[in-house]
Length: 410
Image (cartoon, rainbow, N blue to C red; front, side):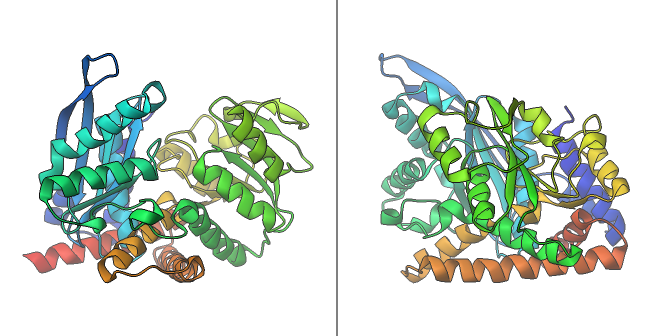
């Protein structure tokens, strides 16, 4: 698999070439400003102490405080976190937020921990780097295998250390702790808003469109439900344990209930069972990779049948696959736009915390739709201006905004 940070840097290089970016700015924007590499001692239930490897990459803060999730996953590594922090820098810029980019991670299988051990790990993460966090410094959020409860523990630990309230230092919190309505479904909802804008350009309607989704966690299951309710046919779905395909369309509410009950999508009544990899090349109009990075490669890109790809996952497409999709006439809606609904509503959460307000879900989604559709329009206009693909259209605008902020700092 291609190194995710190399993918992120190659994407930046292409955008920098289109912008004819000055060498001194290229040097600054290709690498993170800070890398925090630390060990977290955690007392286990048996009384022993175990060390967990933690990371926080603060990529760039030219536009505002670093912003980005923390993932708890056994395959976390520094290159992945650096790539995710770089992508977050362009993501916040692409949707016009006054935020920079960062990312965090811990090498751990959270399912193997008890609730007490998970709380100890979450609080330990904050204790390790609390001086480098804060609403005006670096604002974490949930990511893979982290939850609103984990964010609540982290906020509690941070406020205990600093001695006063700072609810805006972390987002994705429970509503009772200052979380925002709509945050749980924001990534998927933002993706749907962008998809609708893209399909309008292509003269395609969501109703009866055949959609395949790889990944059936929070983002994947919610986007499936939203599109199902709009009349789309969800013909293929996969999670980490397998997949199912049905040309007539799957009953998504029933599938979600099955997943909740069994922990997997396989075993649900469908035309046939398939694999996660096969879902990517199944017969569909729209493909939504919503799991981990690097799943669309030079090997499987030629077999992809979709005409539109909505990247709900971060970095699902390698640079070689991206080139092939452009040649094949496949419209790729890039991750830095497609899944930016999550960070956008995270920003809304910060605003509500700062103003001591609580917005309705309707208000949150109205603001989200306006933000996402405006960002799509700017990306599409740049795509046309530079005669490039939509990823680079979004990138040139995002990189240009960060670069201009750096110029003003000199």
